[in-house]
Amino acid sequence: GSSGSSGGSSGGSSGGSSGIAYGNGPMSQGYMVPADAYQGYVPMMGQGVMLPPATMPMAPVAGANIAGANVAGANIAAQQQYSNTSGVVGSLGVTYHLPSKQVNSDIHPRVGLLEVTVSDGTFRSLAAGEEIKVSVEDEAGHFEELEGYFGDDDKWHFESEPLNTGIPHIYDVSFEVVRMDMKRQRKGDKVIEVEVEKKVRDLGIRRLRLIPNRTVYLNYP
Image 1: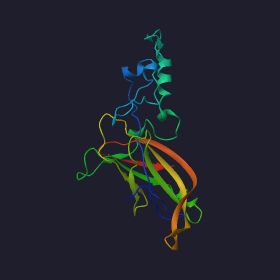
Image 2: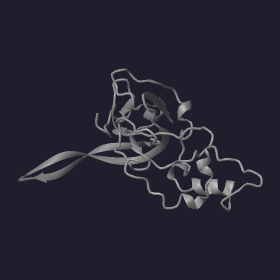
Image 3: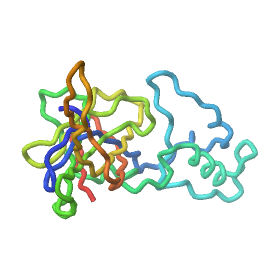
Image 4: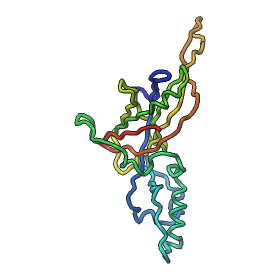
């Protein structure tokens, strides 16, 4: 399974990479610090950035003033520091509401799997020669794009490396329409034709969290 692989035209598809979503639990005291406490925070190598839940900002507390900053104001400003709160349509904050199941016992217990299904209607909208490409990338750019493949079951399958604990493994699942064009290029004293992928259009992005030891199921759209 190589990432960005394709699986057939106008009824076919292509593979790529995926993402993770932040939990919907209550906010901890750590999120109530003034906004300037987040400024200049640089994670150590392999360390994730603390990501406030985008869907549950803490309600204002009457009369509360922490280190001279209003609680509600601090929360709003702090959330604006992170790209995962930028309004990408998807499942951020509700990954644990998506269907999932435990992985097989022969897989490392901290590996996260993702299975992506694209609707028949999306496939029917493709023109001749067009394919769907699915890519799964760490939204913060700290980790490699996930490798995946388009299976005989007409679904995309992705598998992570063992996930580090304490890091919010949030991934962007990108959906694109591509086509393969033939391009001539010179190789030595010969001119050969090679296939080159060309993006036709973007379909959308879904953002989610990979869960250690579980397969998360994502449907598009």
